[in-house]
Image (cartoon, rainbow, N blue to C red; front, side):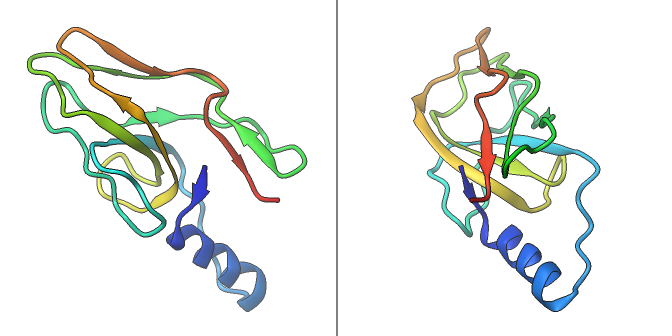
Length: 126
């Protein structure tokens, strides 16, 4: 899991320049059909019941937090393009990438569900 340029800048400005950063009320996982990078937005599937999944993290301990519930994406209709990355976003649509990661390519066909299991997303600042 890699922190985005956006979040890195916000945290550095908050700590070293006393610039306020307001944490999002909720975070969401976005799937991406293109590989992610520090400054890239995800290229999300369109249609067929796709929407970002709300994600909940545990309280951080020793600079590490993990997801505390599954995040599920169910495809209806046509198969989504191959998913190769994910991003944790600060909004259910639009918004900013907070952290990102690439995954082994996965095709999600109609009637299938892609599940990111509890604990599979780990974020650390060490």
